Image (tube, rainbow, N blue to C red; front, side):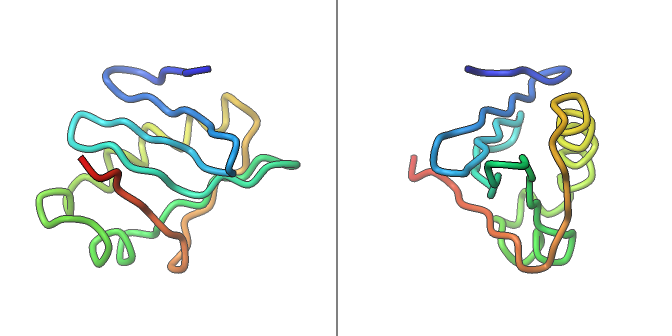
Length: 90
C-alpha cells in the first residue's frame, strides 16, 4: 500500500524491511526494520558520499518530508552514518 506524504513525495514500505522513497529528484530505498518499525536514513555526511552529485543538496528537503511521515505512522526515525541507501537501476 502506498502512503503519500505532502507534495510529490511518497514512502512505501516493502516486505524485505525496506522503505521505497519517491521524491521529485530520485527514487531510492532505505532500511526500515519490522517488528517495531524503524527507518534508518543516512546522515547528511553519509548522504553526500552515497548519492549522485545532483542530489547532494536535497538531504534537508527529503528529511523534512520523511521525519513527519514516520511520526504520523508511529515509526521510529534515525539518521545514521552507517545507514544504507540504494538506487534502482533505471
